[in-house]
Length: 104
Image 1 (cartoon, rainbow, N blue to C red):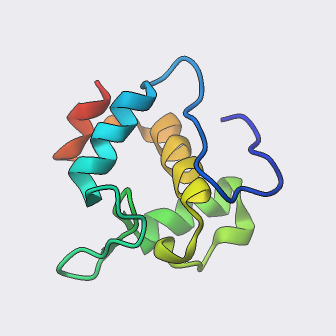
Image 2 (cartoon, rainbow, N blue to C red):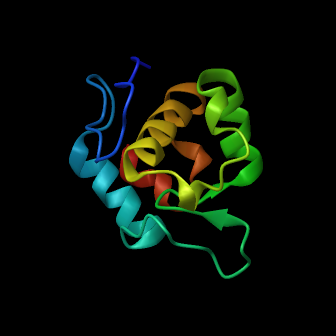
């Protein structure tokens, strides 16, 4: 995963060689209807990509330690994008068991 800019405020395009922007758009639509502040009915999955806090902290702890403990809905859309791209690079599409098929 390439280093993102020091300040990630807006949306971040996906890295080359992986799923396209249209595929990420389809995943976001399926997971959260593009709502970067979405919370699942159970409250366990949060943000545009419906991260659990445990998964968010795991990815952040390896790549972006300053994001550990941050609620995904409180991260900027750009950081949510970067975290999703990083999780995909680490573990593949099946981290999103229903909507991940959009990344194939």
